[in-house]
Length: 288
View: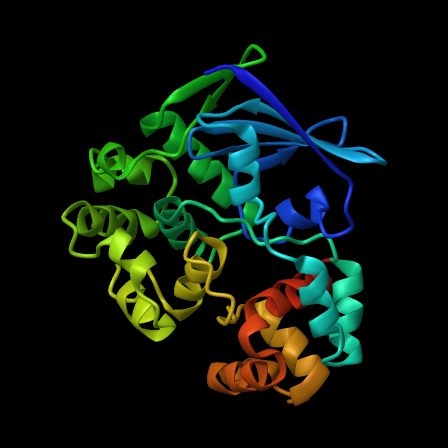
């Protein structure tokens, strides 16, 4: 594979820090010059923002323009989405202003499933470390600029790992979940292609919940951050519970606020754009 370069004009709704630091992905790292380098599918890419342009440079399996357009959701009009959500209320408008460069990535479904199983009760540096070790152990090596990068392993590649071998990579209690889910998908007991074709979000969620280690929050993250791209889901973690309680519910015992109550509120306020609203609120609450 040859190195390719692609450039687009600088736009407000694309800011690398917002995209890569909002909790949706784990394989992008900031370089000394402020750019970000990441590995996704069979691509290694560096994203550099300047005043007038954004430069994408790296090793891509397909045409780089096609890869970038799909992965970074460039065909979706985030300006219009922000205009719509800005009308909901002042707090959401404020959160959009803070994280206006967020775009939801179209990440590989298989990788997203395993990554978010690993993310359960875990912190970002540790998640990134585990995924990097899995990729180095079972993925394919790509050399670029005298450095080695490793693709996330395919279903077949990861199926060769035993629970013991996964434990040695630092997965902790998640080793069994990753092993069992890999075997389930390998045997096509859950068919990822069929998930893409299913139009009913509830049916997709129910199928994901049959996978070992996938609870409601992980299922929602998978649906929102992968190529499934269900924008109507609203993943709820500690930060989202906190921001929704602070802004709207005002329960003195935040931990007692029920998931159903938050979901109902999010559906009423944000509708089919709940998932994007969630990302603005999450990033704003956690970072600001």
